[in-house]
Length: 104
Image 1 (tube, rainbow, N blue to C red):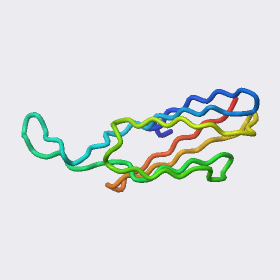
Image 2: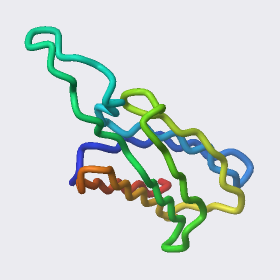
Image 3: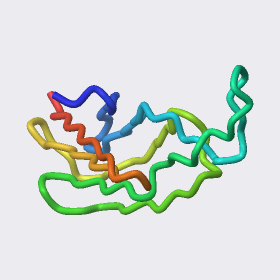
């Protein structure tokens, strides 16, 4: 299981309040290493795709202006026990991550 995505889902009145944190350095390309003084290369998440029961419900496009370990919070109506949420992210260096959570 990929450990780059953490979910917290709460359901009230058939609406899910979904909170997601993606663990990623999100470097801008402007910062310098404290020891070597070399510029740290830009490294940021470009796209995040969110699916509910296999159907895409949201796509997010980010740039280097988003902070380290970005956090998303959104609501999804008409959910029930057993529904699955899946997050897939891709960054500018070709790395990616996947996270899934099931409503219990």
